[in-house]
Image (cartoon, rainbow, N blue to C red; front, top):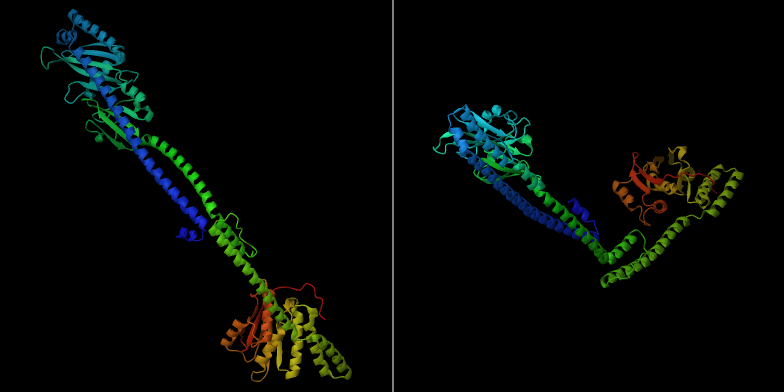
Length: 592
Protein backbone atom coordinates (compact mmCIF):
# COMPACT_ATOMS: atom_id res chain seq x y z
CA UNK A 1 0.00 0.00 0.00
CA UNK A 2 2.85 2.38 0.81
CA UNK A 3 4.47 1.72 -2.60
CA UNK A 4 1.14 2.19 -4.31
CA UNK A 5 0.68 5.52 -2.53
CA UNK A 6 4.12 6.69 -3.65
CA UNK A 7 3.48 5.54 -7.22
CA UNK A 8 0.38 7.72 -7.38
CA UNK A 9 2.65 10.76 -6.97
CA UNK A 10 5.01 9.74 -9.82
CA UNK A 11 4.85 11.34 -13.21
CA UNK A 12 4.02 9.38 -16.35
CA UNK A 13 7.66 8.99 -17.37
CA UNK A 14 8.65 7.52 -14.03
CA UNK A 15 5.71 5.10 -14.06
CA UNK A 16 6.49 3.87 -17.59
CA UNK A 17 10.19 3.50 -16.77
CA UNK A 18 9.42 1.67 -13.52
CA UNK A 19 6.97 -0.83 -15.02
CA UNK A 20 9.06 -1.60 -18.10
CA UNK A 21 12.23 -1.93 -16.01
CA UNK A 22 10.41 -4.17 -13.52
CA UNK A 23 9.05 -6.31 -16.36
CA UNK A 24 12.51 -6.72 -17.87
CA UNK A 25 14.08 -7.54 -14.51
CA UNK A 26 11.40 -10.10 -13.64
CA UNK A 27 11.66 -11.69 -17.07
CA UNK A 28 15.45 -11.81 -16.83
CA UNK A 29 15.27 -13.30 -13.33
CA UNK A 30 12.82 -15.99 -14.47
CA UNK A 31 15.02 -16.87 -17.45
CA UNK A 32 18.13 -16.90 -15.25
CA UNK A 33 16.51 -19.07 -12.57
CA UNK A 34 15.08 -21.56 -15.05
CA UNK A 35 18.36 -21.74 -16.95
CA UNK A 36 20.32 -22.17 -13.73
CA UNK A 37 18.00 -24.91 -12.45
CA UNK A 38 18.21 -26.73 -15.77
CA UNK A 39 21.99 -26.38 -15.94
CA UNK A 40 22.35 -27.43 -12.31
CA UNK A 41 20.11 -30.46 -12.83
CA UNK A 42 21.87 -31.75 -15.93
CA UNK A 43 25.38 -30.95 -14.66
CA UNK A 44 24.64 -32.62 -11.32
CA UNK A 45 23.16 -35.62 -13.05
CA UNK A 46 26.20 -35.83 -15.31
CA UNK A 47 28.54 -35.55 -12.31
CA UNK A 48 26.70 -38.31 -10.46
CA UNK A 49 26.78 -40.57 -13.49
CA UNK A 50 30.50 -39.89 -13.92
CA UNK A 51 31.12 -40.73 -10.26
CA UNK A 52 29.12 -43.99 -10.54
CA UNK A 53 30.92 -44.94 -13.74
CA UNK A 54 34.32 -44.31 -12.22
CA UNK A 55 33.31 -46.17 -9.06
CA UNK A 56 32.13 -49.13 -11.16
CA UNK A 57 35.44 -49.13 -13.03
CA UNK A 58 37.42 -49.07 -9.79
CA UNK A 59 35.27 -51.84 -8.28
CA UNK A 60 35.80 -54.00 -11.34
CA UNK A 61 39.54 -53.43 -11.16
CA UNK A 62 39.65 -54.14 -7.43
CA UNK A 63 37.54 -57.27 -7.88
CA UNK A 64 40.08 -58.47 -10.41
CA UNK A 65 42.89 -57.70 -7.99
CA UNK A 66 41.31 -59.70 -5.16
CA UNK A 67 40.64 -62.57 -7.56
CA UNK A 68 44.29 -62.48 -8.57
CA UNK A 69 45.27 -62.63 -4.89
CA UNK A 70 42.99 -65.61 -4.36
CA UNK A 71 44.20 -67.38 -7.50
CA UNK A 72 47.79 -66.70 -6.45
CA UNK A 73 47.00 -68.20 -3.02
CA UNK A 74 45.31 -71.26 -4.60
CA UNK A 75 48.33 -71.81 -6.83
CA UNK A 76 50.59 -71.89 -3.78
CA UNK A 77 48.21 -74.11 -1.80
CA UNK A 78 48.21 -76.89 -4.46
CA UNK A 79 51.94 -76.70 -5.07
CA UNK A 80 53.57 -80.09 -4.39
CA UNK A 81 56.20 -78.88 -1.92
CA UNK A 82 53.51 -77.11 0.12
CA UNK A 83 51.20 -80.14 0.06
CA UNK A 84 54.06 -82.49 1.01
CA UNK A 85 55.17 -80.23 3.88
CA UNK A 86 51.64 -79.92 5.33
CA UNK A 87 50.85 -83.66 4.97
CA UNK A 88 54.16 -84.83 6.47
CA UNK A 89 54.19 -85.93 10.08
CA UNK A 90 57.81 -84.97 10.48
CA UNK A 91 58.35 -81.95 12.66
CA UNK A 92 62.10 -82.18 13.09
CA UNK A 93 65.19 -83.78 11.68
CA UNK A 94 66.82 -83.89 8.29
CA UNK A 95 63.66 -84.90 6.46
CA UNK A 96 61.74 -82.01 7.96
CA UNK A 97 64.48 -79.55 7.09
CA UNK A 98 64.49 -80.82 3.52
CA UNK A 99 60.72 -80.45 3.15
CA UNK A 100 60.79 -77.03 4.78
CA UNK A 101 63.66 -76.00 2.54
CA UNK A 102 61.68 -76.91 -0.56
CA UNK A 103 58.77 -74.78 0.69
CA UNK A 104 61.14 -71.93 1.54
CA UNK A 105 62.63 -71.95 -1.97
CA UNK A 106 59.16 -72.01 -3.49
CA UNK A 107 58.03 -69.10 -1.35
CA UNK A 108 61.15 -67.21 -2.33
CA UNK A 109 60.22 -67.62 -5.99
CA UNK A 110 56.64 -66.45 -5.28
CA UNK A 111 58.00 -63.43 -3.42
CA UNK A 112 59.95 -62.48 -6.52
CA UNK A 113 56.94 -63.03 -8.77
CA UNK A 114 54.61 -60.59 -6.88
CA UNK A 115 56.34 -57.37 -6.01
CA UNK A 116 53.78 -56.17 -3.44
CA UNK A 117 54.04 -59.42 -1.43
CA UNK A 118 55.57 -58.50 1.96
CA UNK A 119 55.77 -62.00 3.37
CA UNK A 120 54.19 -65.44 2.92
CA UNK A 121 53.85 -68.18 5.54
CA UNK A 122 52.94 -71.88 5.25
CA UNK A 123 51.79 -73.30 8.58
CA UNK A 124 51.31 -76.99 9.37
CA UNK A 125 47.97 -77.65 11.03
CA UNK A 126 49.16 -80.66 13.05
CA UNK A 127 52.23 -79.13 14.72
CA UNK A 128 51.78 -75.38 14.41
CA UNK A 129 55.23 -75.12 12.82
CA UNK A 130 55.58 -72.85 9.83
CA UNK A 131 57.87 -71.75 7.01
CA UNK A 132 58.24 -67.93 6.77
CA UNK A 133 59.68 -66.00 3.83
CA UNK A 134 59.43 -62.20 3.52
CA UNK A 135 61.17 -58.98 2.66
CA UNK A 136 61.50 -58.41 6.39
CA UNK A 137 62.54 -60.77 9.13
CA UNK A 138 59.89 -62.61 11.04
CA UNK A 139 60.75 -60.49 14.06
CA UNK A 140 60.29 -57.21 12.15
CA UNK A 141 57.07 -58.53 10.69
CA UNK A 142 55.94 -59.43 14.23
CA UNK A 143 54.33 -62.56 12.84
CA UNK A 144 54.47 -64.65 16.00
CA UNK A 145 52.97 -61.81 18.05
CA UNK A 146 50.19 -60.73 15.67
CA UNK A 147 49.15 -63.86 13.76
CA UNK A 148 46.57 -65.43 16.11
CA UNK A 149 44.76 -62.18 17.02
CA UNK A 150 44.75 -60.87 13.46
CA UNK A 151 43.28 -64.11 12.19
CA UNK A 152 40.46 -63.89 14.75
CA UNK A 153 39.68 -60.30 13.75
CA UNK A 154 39.72 -61.08 10.02
CA UNK A 155 36.47 -61.50 8.09
CA UNK A 156 35.43 -64.11 5.52
CA UNK A 157 36.39 -62.94 2.07
CA UNK A 158 33.02 -64.02 0.71
CA UNK A 159 29.74 -65.22 2.12
CA UNK A 160 30.33 -68.76 3.47
CA UNK A 161 33.98 -68.75 2.35
CA UNK A 162 36.77 -70.24 4.50
CA UNK A 163 39.18 -67.72 3.03
CA UNK A 164 39.60 -64.73 5.34
CA UNK A 165 41.00 -61.26 4.74
CA UNK A 166 42.14 -58.58 7.13
CA UNK A 167 43.27 -55.02 6.60
CA UNK A 168 45.37 -53.40 9.29
CA UNK A 169 48.68 -52.10 10.58
CA UNK A 170 49.31 -54.81 13.13
CA UNK A 171 52.18 -56.67 11.46
CA UNK A 172 54.94 -54.16 10.92
CA UNK A 173 56.58 -51.90 13.43
CA UNK A 174 56.41 -48.86 11.14
CA UNK A 175 52.59 -49.00 11.32
CA UNK A 176 52.03 -49.41 7.59
CA UNK A 177 48.64 -50.75 6.57
CA UNK A 178 48.62 -54.06 4.69
CA UNK A 179 46.20 -56.67 3.37
CA UNK A 180 46.54 -60.17 4.84
CA UNK A 181 44.90 -63.16 3.17
CA UNK A 182 44.37 -66.34 5.19
CA UNK A 183 43.79 -69.36 2.91
CA UNK A 184 43.30 -72.87 4.37
CA UNK A 185 45.57 -75.55 2.84
CA UNK A 186 43.41 -78.50 1.90
CA UNK A 187 44.75 -81.88 0.82
CA UNK A 188 44.62 -82.39 -2.90
CA UNK A 189 43.92 -86.10 -2.33
CA UNK A 190 41.20 -85.79 0.35
CA UNK A 191 38.11 -83.56 0.24
CA UNK A 192 37.79 -80.91 2.96
CA UNK A 193 40.83 -82.19 4.80
CA UNK A 194 42.53 -79.12 6.31
CA UNK A 195 46.26 -79.62 6.49
CA UNK A 196 47.44 -76.08 7.28
CA UNK A 197 47.17 -72.34 6.60
CA UNK A 198 48.67 -70.10 3.92
CA UNK A 199 49.24 -66.54 5.12
CA UNK A 200 49.94 -63.84 2.49
CA UNK A 201 50.65 -60.25 3.52
CA UNK A 202 50.51 -57.68 0.70
CA UNK A 203 51.01 -53.98 0.43
CA UNK A 204 47.65 -52.90 -1.13
CA UNK A 205 47.74 -49.33 -2.49
CA UNK A 206 45.19 -49.70 -5.27
CA UNK A 207 42.42 -47.73 -3.57
CA UNK A 208 44.66 -44.77 -2.70
CA UNK A 209 46.13 -44.63 -6.19
CA UNK A 210 42.72 -44.70 -7.83
CA UNK A 211 41.49 -42.06 -5.43
CA UNK A 212 44.30 -39.70 -6.29
CA UNK A 213 44.15 -40.31 -10.00
CA UNK A 214 40.47 -40.91 -10.72
CA UNK A 215 38.28 -38.64 -8.57
CA UNK A 216 40.56 -36.00 -7.15
CA UNK A 217 38.98 -33.35 -9.34
CA UNK A 218 35.76 -33.69 -7.35
CA UNK A 219 37.54 -33.65 -3.97
CA UNK A 220 35.90 -36.97 -3.13
CA UNK A 221 36.96 -39.59 -0.60
CA UNK A 222 37.31 -43.16 -1.91
CA UNK A 223 37.73 -46.05 0.52
CA UNK A 224 37.12 -49.73 1.10
CA UNK A 225 34.65 -50.81 3.78
CA UNK A 226 33.96 -54.27 5.13
CA UNK A 227 30.50 -55.74 5.60
CA UNK A 228 30.49 -54.57 9.25
CA UNK A 229 30.67 -50.94 8.14
CA UNK A 230 34.30 -50.45 9.19
CA UNK A 231 36.76 -48.62 6.94
CA UNK A 232 39.62 -50.95 6.09
CA UNK A 233 41.52 -49.02 3.43
CA UNK A 234 41.60 -45.28 2.78
CA UNK A 235 44.12 -42.62 1.89
CA UNK A 236 43.34 -40.77 5.16
CA UNK A 237 44.65 -43.49 7.47
CA UNK A 238 43.18 -41.80 10.57
CA UNK A 239 39.75 -43.10 9.51
CA UNK A 240 40.87 -46.74 9.16
CA UNK A 241 39.02 -48.98 11.60
CA UNK A 242 36.26 -46.42 12.23
CA UNK A 243 32.67 -47.25 11.42
CA UNK A 244 30.82 -45.07 8.93
CA UNK A 245 27.63 -43.42 10.36
CA UNK A 246 25.49 -44.54 7.44
CA UNK A 247 26.45 -48.23 7.51
CA UNK A 248 22.82 -49.36 7.92
CA UNK A 249 21.94 -47.60 4.66
CA UNK A 250 24.45 -49.68 2.69
CA UNK A 251 22.67 -52.68 1.21
CA UNK A 252 22.48 -54.59 -2.04
CA UNK A 253 25.14 -54.59 -4.70
CA UNK A 254 25.17 -50.83 -5.35
CA UNK A 255 23.35 -47.60 -4.61
CA UNK A 256 23.67 -44.09 -3.21
CA UNK A 257 22.47 -42.05 -0.25
CA UNK A 258 22.94 -38.56 1.15
CA UNK A 259 24.45 -38.00 4.58
CA UNK A 260 25.41 -34.69 6.22
CA UNK A 261 26.21 -32.77 3.06
CA UNK A 262 27.79 -35.80 1.38
CA UNK A 263 26.60 -37.82 -1.58
CA UNK A 264 27.60 -41.43 -0.86
CA UNK A 265 27.93 -43.80 -3.81
CA UNK A 266 28.66 -47.43 -2.95
CA UNK A 267 29.17 -50.67 -4.85
CA UNK A 268 29.99 -54.15 -3.65
CA UNK A 269 33.34 -55.53 -4.81
CA UNK A 270 32.17 -58.56 -6.78
CA UNK A 271 31.18 -61.37 -4.40
CA UNK A 272 33.59 -60.22 -1.74
CA UNK A 273 32.38 -58.98 1.64
CA UNK A 274 33.64 -55.50 0.90
CA UNK A 275 32.16 -52.30 -0.45
CA UNK A 276 33.95 -49.56 -2.29
CA UNK A 277 32.57 -46.22 -1.07
CA UNK A 278 32.86 -42.85 -2.73
CA UNK A 279 31.98 -39.78 -0.63
CA UNK A 280 31.47 -36.58 -2.64
CA UNK A 281 30.62 -33.23 -0.98
CA UNK A 282 27.25 -32.07 -2.32
CA UNK A 283 28.80 -28.64 -2.89
CA UNK A 284 31.22 -30.20 -5.36
CA UNK A 285 28.28 -31.55 -7.35
CA UNK A 286 26.86 -28.06 -7.69
CA UNK A 287 30.20 -26.33 -8.05
CA UNK A 288 30.09 -26.41 -11.84
CA UNK A 289 26.48 -25.28 -11.70
CA UNK A 290 27.39 -22.38 -9.43
CA UNK A 291 30.11 -21.25 -11.81
CA UNK A 292 27.68 -21.53 -14.70
CA UNK A 293 25.05 -19.66 -12.69
CA UNK A 294 27.49 -16.85 -11.87
CA UNK A 295 28.49 -16.52 -15.54
CA UNK A 296 24.83 -16.63 -16.58
CA UNK A 297 23.94 -14.06 -13.92
CA UNK A 298 26.61 -11.61 -15.11
CA UNK A 299 25.58 -12.12 -18.73
CA UNK A 300 21.90 -11.66 -17.85
CA UNK A 301 22.57 -8.60 -15.71
CA UNK A 302 24.76 -7.13 -18.42
CA UNK A 303 22.12 -7.67 -21.08
CA UNK A 304 19.42 -6.34 -18.74
CA UNK A 305 21.45 -3.24 -17.93
CA UNK A 306 22.11 -2.68 -21.63
CA UNK A 307 18.41 -3.14 -22.44
CA UNK A 308 17.33 -0.79 -19.63
CA UNK A 309 19.79 1.86 -20.87
CA UNK A 310 18.38 1.63 -24.40
CA UNK A 311 14.86 1.62 -22.97
CA UNK A 312 15.49 4.76 -20.90
CA UNK A 313 16.86 6.57 -23.94
CA UNK A 314 13.78 5.59 -25.93
CA UNK A 315 11.44 6.71 -23.14
CA UNK A 316 13.33 10.00 -22.79
CA UNK A 317 12.97 10.54 -26.53
CA UNK A 318 9.24 9.74 -26.51
CA UNK A 319 8.55 11.66 -23.30
CA UNK A 320 10.67 14.74 -24.06
CA UNK A 321 7.80 16.80 -25.64
CA UNK A 322 5.48 15.98 -22.71
CA UNK A 323 8.29 16.77 -20.28
CA UNK A 324 8.61 20.22 -21.87
CA UNK A 325 4.91 20.83 -21.24
CA UNK A 326 5.12 19.56 -17.62
CA UNK A 327 8.26 21.60 -16.89
CA UNK A 328 6.63 24.75 -18.21
CA UNK A 329 3.50 24.07 -16.14
CA UNK A 330 5.69 23.65 -13.05
CA UNK A 331 7.25 27.03 -13.75
CA UNK A 332 3.80 28.59 -14.08
CA UNK A 333 2.70 27.01 -10.78
CA UNK A 334 5.71 28.70 -9.14
CA UNK A 335 4.50 32.07 -10.38
CA UNK A 336 6.50 32.38 -13.62
CA UNK A 337 3.54 33.47 -15.72
CA UNK A 338 5.75 34.49 -18.64
CA UNK A 339 6.76 30.84 -19.26
CA UNK A 340 5.85 29.43 -22.69
CA UNK A 341 6.37 25.98 -24.24
CA UNK A 342 9.08 25.67 -26.87
CA UNK A 343 7.46 23.80 -29.78
CA UNK A 344 10.68 22.83 -31.59
CA UNK A 345 10.93 19.18 -32.75
CA UNK A 346 7.47 18.33 -31.41
CA UNK A 347 5.12 15.77 -32.93
CA UNK A 348 1.65 16.81 -34.09
CA UNK A 349 -0.20 15.84 -30.91
CA UNK A 350 2.33 17.47 -28.57
CA UNK A 351 2.36 20.61 -30.74
CA UNK A 352 -1.44 20.96 -30.38
CA UNK A 353 -1.12 20.61 -26.62
CA UNK A 354 1.66 23.21 -26.50
CA UNK A 355 -0.26 25.67 -28.70
CA UNK A 356 -3.34 25.34 -26.48
CA UNK A 357 -1.29 25.90 -23.34
CA UNK A 358 0.50 28.96 -24.78
CA UNK A 359 -2.81 30.50 -25.92
CA UNK A 360 -4.30 29.88 -22.48
CA UNK A 361 -1.35 31.57 -20.75
CA UNK A 362 -1.59 34.58 -23.07
CA UNK A 363 -5.24 35.00 -22.11
CA UNK A 364 -4.43 34.54 -18.42
CA UNK A 365 -1.77 37.26 -18.69
CA UNK A 366 -4.30 39.60 -20.24
CA UNK A 367 -6.89 38.84 -17.56
CA UNK A 368 -4.30 39.25 -14.79
CA UNK A 369 -3.38 42.69 -16.07
CA UNK A 370 -7.04 43.65 -16.11
CA UNK A 371 -7.58 42.33 -12.58
CA UNK A 372 -4.48 44.13 -11.25
CA UNK A 373 -5.61 47.38 -12.84
CA UNK A 374 -9.11 47.04 -11.43
CA UNK A 375 -7.76 46.06 -7.98
CA UNK A 376 -5.43 49.04 -7.97
CA UNK A 377 -8.31 51.30 -8.82
CA UNK A 378 -10.49 49.80 -6.08
CA UNK A 379 -7.79 50.15 -3.43
CA UNK A 380 -7.06 53.68 -4.52
CA UNK A 381 -10.75 54.52 -4.23
CA UNK A 382 -10.84 53.04 -0.72
CA UNK A 383 -7.76 54.95 0.43
CA UNK A 384 -9.11 58.12 -1.10
CA UNK A 385 -12.40 57.54 0.66
CA UNK A 386 -10.57 57.10 3.96
CA UNK A 387 -8.59 60.29 3.70
CA UNK A 388 -11.44 62.16 2.10
CA UNK A 389 -13.55 61.71 5.26
CA UNK A 390 -11.67 64.54 6.95
CA UNK A 391 -9.87 67.46 5.37
CA UNK A 392 -8.20 68.70 8.50
CA UNK A 393 -5.57 71.22 7.37
CA UNK A 394 -7.69 74.30 7.15
CA UNK A 395 -9.85 73.31 10.11
CA UNK A 396 -6.80 72.63 12.31
CA UNK A 397 -5.31 76.10 11.63
CA UNK A 398 -8.69 77.76 12.25
CA UNK A 399 -9.12 75.95 15.60
CA UNK A 400 -5.70 77.16 16.72
CA UNK A 401 -6.78 80.75 16.09
CA UNK A 402 -10.06 80.20 18.01
CA UNK A 403 -8.13 78.64 20.92
CA UNK A 404 -5.85 81.63 21.32
CA UNK A 405 -8.80 84.02 21.02
CA UNK A 406 -10.63 82.11 23.79
CA UNK A 407 -7.54 82.29 25.99
CA UNK A 408 -7.36 86.06 25.42
CA UNK A 409 -11.05 86.42 26.38
CA UNK A 410 -10.61 84.19 29.48
CA UNK A 411 -13.15 81.52 28.34
CA UNK A 412 -11.50 78.38 29.72
CA UNK A 413 -14.20 75.87 28.64
CA UNK A 414 -14.07 76.96 24.99
CA UNK A 415 -10.28 76.98 25.15
CA UNK A 416 -10.18 73.38 26.47
CA UNK A 417 -12.57 72.07 23.86
CA UNK A 418 -10.88 73.87 20.99
CA UNK A 419 -7.46 72.74 22.15
CA UNK A 420 -8.70 69.11 22.32
CA UNK A 421 -10.07 69.39 18.80
CA UNK A 422 -6.81 70.87 17.59
CA UNK A 423 -4.87 68.00 19.17
CA UNK A 424 -7.33 65.57 17.58
CA UNK A 425 -6.79 66.91 14.07
CA UNK A 426 -3.10 67.28 14.66
CA UNK A 427 -2.83 63.48 14.99
CA UNK A 428 -5.05 63.06 11.94
CA UNK A 429 -2.41 64.86 9.90
CA UNK A 430 0.74 63.29 11.42
CA UNK A 431 2.83 64.70 8.57
CA UNK A 432 1.13 62.32 6.19
CA UNK A 433 2.60 59.22 7.85
CA UNK A 434 0.57 56.01 7.85
CA UNK A 435 2.27 54.47 10.92
CA UNK A 436 2.60 56.35 14.23
CA UNK A 437 3.69 55.31 17.76
CA UNK A 438 0.99 53.88 19.99
CA UNK A 439 1.62 56.77 22.42
CA UNK A 440 0.49 59.30 19.81
CA UNK A 441 -2.56 57.18 18.98
CA UNK A 442 -3.48 57.15 22.71
CA UNK A 443 -3.03 60.93 22.85
CA UNK A 444 -5.41 61.16 19.92
CA UNK A 445 -8.23 59.17 21.57
CA UNK A 446 -7.78 61.07 24.85
CA UNK A 447 -8.38 64.29 22.93
CA UNK A 448 -11.37 62.70 21.26
CA UNK A 449 -12.82 61.62 24.64
CA UNK A 450 -12.38 65.17 26.04
CA UNK A 451 -14.56 66.47 23.22
CA UNK A 452 -17.14 63.67 23.65
CA UNK A 453 -17.35 64.12 27.45
CA UNK A 454 -17.86 67.88 27.08
CA UNK A 455 -20.53 67.13 24.54
CA UNK A 456 -22.32 64.36 26.52
CA UNK A 457 -21.73 65.56 30.09
CA UNK A 458 -18.87 63.21 31.11
CA UNK A 459 -20.56 59.87 30.35
CA UNK A 460 -17.30 58.08 29.43
CA UNK A 461 -14.41 56.92 31.62
CA UNK A 462 -11.15 55.62 30.19
CA UNK A 463 -9.16 52.88 31.95
CA UNK A 464 -5.76 52.73 30.27
CA UNK A 465 -3.75 49.62 31.29
CA UNK A 466 -1.10 49.99 28.62
CA UNK A 467 2.47 50.15 30.03
CA UNK A 468 4.67 52.94 28.73
CA UNK A 469 7.06 50.30 27.40
CA UNK A 470 4.56 49.75 24.54
CA UNK A 471 4.19 53.45 23.65
CA UNK A 472 6.78 53.14 20.84
CA UNK A 473 4.97 50.25 19.15
CA UNK A 474 3.92 51.23 15.63
CA UNK A 475 0.22 51.32 14.85
CA UNK A 476 -1.68 52.50 11.75
CA UNK A 477 -2.86 56.07 12.25
CA UNK A 478 -6.55 56.51 13.16
CA UNK A 479 -6.98 52.86 14.32
CA UNK A 480 -8.42 53.38 17.83
CA UNK A 481 -10.62 56.44 17.27
CA UNK A 482 -13.18 54.74 14.98
CA UNK A 483 -13.38 51.83 17.45
CA UNK A 484 -13.87 54.20 20.44
CA UNK A 485 -16.52 56.07 18.50
CA UNK A 486 -18.26 52.79 17.67
CA UNK A 487 -18.18 51.79 21.36
CA UNK A 488 -19.71 55.13 22.44
CA UNK A 489 -22.51 55.37 19.87
CA UNK A 490 -23.48 51.70 19.69
CA UNK A 491 -22.72 50.61 23.24
CA UNK A 492 -22.44 53.23 25.99
CA UNK A 493 -24.95 55.86 24.82
CA UNK A 494 -27.78 53.39 24.29
CA UNK A 495 -27.15 51.65 27.60
CA UNK A 496 -29.60 52.28 30.40
CA UNK A 497 -28.13 55.05 32.58
CA UNK A 498 -26.13 56.43 29.66
CA UNK A 499 -22.69 56.03 31.24
CA UNK A 500 -19.86 53.55 30.80
CA UNK A 501 -16.17 52.78 30.61
CA UNK A 502 -13.66 52.06 27.90
CA UNK A 503 -10.80 49.67 28.73
CA UNK A 504 -7.44 49.49 26.96
CA UNK A 505 -5.01 46.57 27.36
CA UNK A 506 -2.07 45.20 25.35
CA UNK A 507 -0.02 41.96 25.27
CA UNK A 508 2.77 40.61 23.13
CA UNK A 509 2.91 37.06 21.75
CA UNK A 510 6.08 36.22 19.84
CA UNK A 511 6.45 38.56 16.89
CA UNK A 512 2.88 39.87 17.19
CA UNK A 513 1.06 42.29 19.51
CA UNK A 514 -2.60 42.17 20.57
CA UNK A 515 -4.26 45.51 21.55
CA UNK A 516 -7.70 45.12 23.24
CA UNK A 517 -10.33 47.87 23.40
CA UNK A 518 -13.42 46.97 25.44
CA UNK A 519 -16.51 48.80 26.66
CA UNK A 520 -19.14 48.33 29.34
CA UNK A 521 -21.95 49.22 26.98
CA UNK A 522 -25.18 47.44 26.10
CA UNK A 523 -23.31 44.60 24.40
CA UNK A 524 -24.28 42.36 21.47
CA UNK A 525 -25.73 38.91 21.02
CA UNK A 526 -23.37 36.07 20.09
CA UNK A 527 -25.05 35.82 16.70
CA UNK A 528 -24.37 39.53 16.07
CA UNK A 529 -20.73 39.14 17.13
CA UNK A 530 -20.26 36.10 14.85
CA UNK A 531 -21.86 37.98 11.98
CA UNK A 532 -19.52 40.93 12.55
CA UNK A 533 -16.38 38.74 12.66
CA UNK A 534 -17.40 36.93 9.45
CA UNK A 535 -18.21 40.07 7.48
CA UNK A 536 -15.67 42.55 8.85
CA UNK A 537 -13.33 42.06 5.88
CA UNK A 538 -16.11 42.64 3.35
CA UNK A 539 -16.52 46.11 1.99
CA UNK A 540 -20.11 47.05 2.87
CA UNK A 541 -21.33 50.64 3.21
CA UNK A 542 -24.25 49.57 5.43
CA UNK A 543 -22.10 48.15 8.26
CA UNK A 544 -19.66 50.21 10.31
CA UNK A 545 -17.81 52.17 7.69
CA UNK A 546 -15.18 53.33 10.22
CA UNK A 547 -14.66 49.83 11.72
CA UNK A 548 -14.40 48.18 8.32
CA UNK A 549 -11.98 50.88 7.18
CA UNK A 550 -9.72 50.10 10.14
CA UNK A 551 -9.78 46.35 9.47
CA UNK A 552 -9.26 46.76 5.72
CA UNK A 553 -6.31 49.12 6.20
CA UNK A 554 -4.62 46.60 8.53
CA UNK A 555 -5.21 43.75 6.05
CA UNK A 556 -3.85 45.83 3.16
CA UNK A 557 -0.76 46.80 5.16
CA UNK A 558 0.12 43.49 6.81
CA UNK A 559 -1.97 40.75 5.24
CA UNK A 560 -5.19 38.92 6.05
CA UNK A 561 -3.62 37.21 9.09
CA UNK A 562 -3.94 40.55 10.92
CA UNK A 563 -6.98 42.70 11.75
CA UNK A 564 -9.89 42.93 14.20
CA UNK A 565 -11.74 40.30 16.19
CA UNK A 566 -14.84 40.93 18.39
CA UNK A 567 -15.99 38.98 21.49
CA UNK A 568 -18.09 39.48 24.63
CA UNK A 569 -16.38 40.72 27.79
CA UNK A 570 -17.05 40.31 31.52
CA UNK A 571 -18.47 43.83 31.86
CA UNK A 572 -21.39 42.89 29.62
CA UNK A 573 -20.12 44.90 26.69
CA UNK A 574 -17.99 44.06 23.68
CA UNK A 575 -14.20 43.89 23.27
CA UNK A 576 -12.40 44.23 19.96
CA UNK A 577 -8.90 42.77 19.74
CA UNK A 578 -6.51 44.38 17.26
CA UNK A 579 -3.86 41.93 15.95
CA UNK A 580 -0.73 43.70 14.61
CA UNK A 581 2.90 42.77 13.92
CA UNK A 582 5.27 43.87 16.72
CA UNK A 583 7.25 46.81 15.32
CA UNK A 584 8.95 49.50 17.41
CA UNK A 585 9.59 53.01 16.08
CA UNK A 586 13.32 53.75 16.33
CA UNK A 587 13.08 57.52 15.84
CA UNK A 588 10.28 59.82 16.83
CA UNK A 589 10.27 62.93 14.69
CA UNK A 590 7.02 64.18 16.15
CA UNK A 591 3.85 65.23 14.35
CA UNK A 592 2.59 68.37 12.80
